[in-house]
Image 1 (cartoon, rainbow, N blue to C red):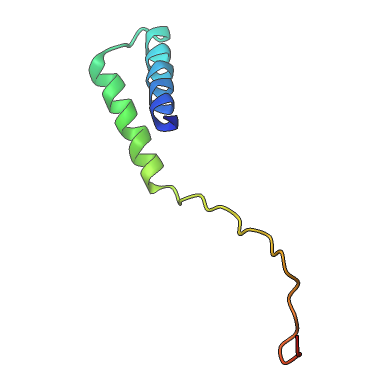
Image 2: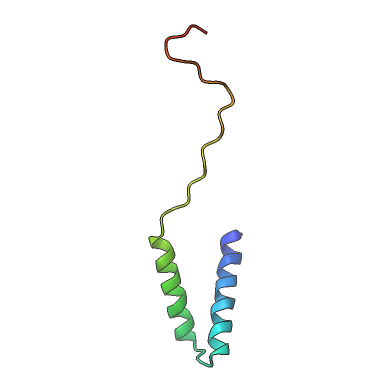
Length: 64
């Protein structure tokens, strides 16, 4: 659902900018969205931080 809303938002933003600059056409919208998608594909993926440890770590060799 998030991807759908982000896509619709990107289309609306690009179309609004092109209409405001009086350069709106379907080809320009598709070209701009293609370039944005290509740039996003080359960005490194975002990684979640590892979950915090819940048990304290014991030193190696200790008996517990």
